[in-house]
Length: 203
Image 1 (cartoon, rainbow, N blue to C red):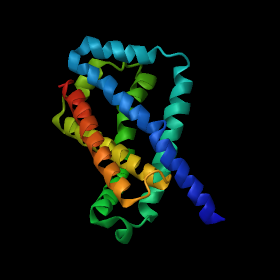
Image 2 (cartoon, rainbow, N blue to C red; image 1 turned 180 degrees about the horizontal axis):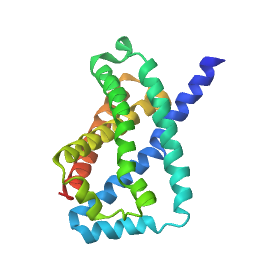
Image 3 (cartoon, one colour; image 1 turned 90 degrees about the vertical axis):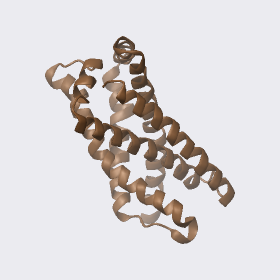
């Protein structure tokens, strides 16, 4: 019974990592990418998101609650799961390890990012705009931290999609899993370019 319960918890963890968390991460990076067109473009995109009706409820239901479950249960998985060398081979097991490491790092990174942005708005009535992000990444160490965070997030999402396809029985054969590896890694590279270009636009 315990194993069956854990099976469903892991399924939920996998699903939430893709929908809505993965979709939000992708959308968030593309909104940030608007900064490559200048401060006015980013501020306009940011204000559009801020003007959504029932924003606070949407943030908690669609972002924070799913994200917290995915993060906390993901840390549990990271410290209890073991790589399966015989089934997936060396490369996939490196990805397995990286998935766990990036997941743990992202718990810290996302918490810090929320503290620097959303919580500053709630506590100090700061405005989440181009100037806020430019001020944050004006520190070279913080810029490096954000770049690493973006790369960790894009890898974690891309490899998470691969894991989702396997765990949900969509890619069962070795050939389909190999194709999925290539597709998800191309997605990782493309989304990483978007994310890194976006953060550099604030410099």
